[in-house]
Amino acid sequence: MVITPSAVRRPAATSTPVDVTPVDGRPRGRGVAAVLLAAGAALTPWLVVLGTTLPATTTVRHWPLAWVGLDALEALGLLTTGALLLLDDPRARQAAAATGTLLLADAWFDVTTAAAGSEFAVALAMAVCAELPLAVACARIAMRCDDAYPEMCRSRASSD
Image 1 (cartoon, helix red, strand yellow):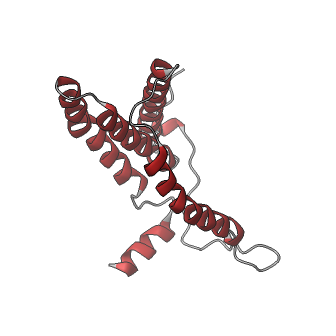
Image 2 (cartoon, helix red, strand yellow):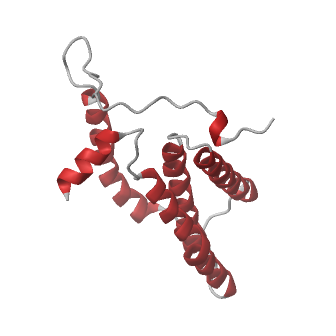
Image 3 (tube, rainbow, N blue to C red):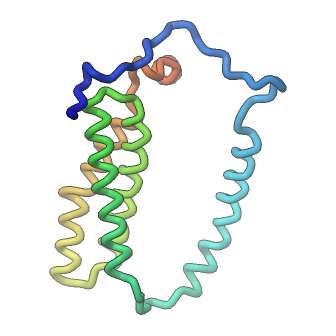
């Protein structure tokens, strides 16, 4: 069975804002925000520890598995994002955000772990010609303004 955009039912966009205030009246996400801020702050001294104690080289037992796994996740993310875009599904934004992040991580690790010479040149070319442009495309999809999220359109328009 082939699913076409016209075969998918999407909820109609409404111009009436939906009240998402919890029953207790407190804004959502404050506790999660506090944990995320604390975790981010705690990582700062950890970066210094890593920068001063990690060895310059190391042997990794499952090196091929790590790279194949990362590339498999990227392929899955690109396929999912593309399919959701074809279906005009707003969840393409979340898939694009995750996929773009994976692509950035892949570019970073490809370039920083490549040996000098031709291996580095290939890694840099892949980053500049494939991974980073795809990551930018995914970021644009993730941040786009559409009928599914009209509140983002209003907040973006007011900040310009």
